[in-house]
Image (tube, rainbow, N blue to C red; front, side, top):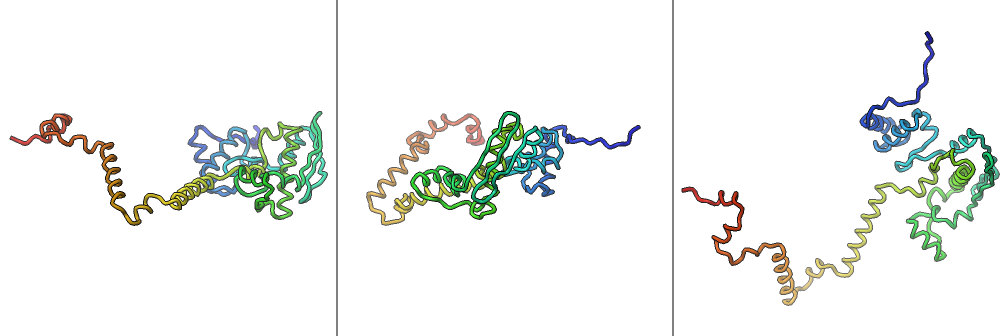
Length: 269
């Protein structure tokens, strides 16, 4: 009888509750740099569906705003695992270039800082506003990760590697992007809510600047204004039906009420 340990990567999951509990524990552990239970659930579900261990997930993926992304070195490693090869031509803050080949597909890919400055992903702000600013000849402020040379080198290198692997060996990444790419287009839900709330506050500020009804009523009130306000309140009350029973007798009003209310209105004999 053999006493060798059998390596298994499958998670012992029987139902969704198991994945939820695993996600909660992963968020509490801080092993993957996450704090939300929802991100932990994504990790547990991915490991279960892909049949990989948690350590393999950590070596392969990185969670950005709830989206799994594949590390750059993992893409290159998978390219080699699929029989491909690559050669680094340049990896500087001003130029990133790589030669990649897999089977019959091969090519040279590069991205310079001069080319990247013509794209909206290096600038802070909404993409539509950035594109409009670039079209008008303006240069919006850079994102923090593109402002320093070394960080800029890593960002443009990740984009070149992702483009090369996706072109010559798409089965190595299978539609997954690098963390640098995901962080450029993915926006946290909290930031989106903050943007929407900011837009709402801006609309209210514009309304007050034009003179909202509260600001108008706070000023001197003329007789014609009071009459107009009284007419508006009268019309509002009529629409709500608060005055529909005006002019009815007591007997007519009772006949319009439901039977259960009539029992309560009857006086004891």
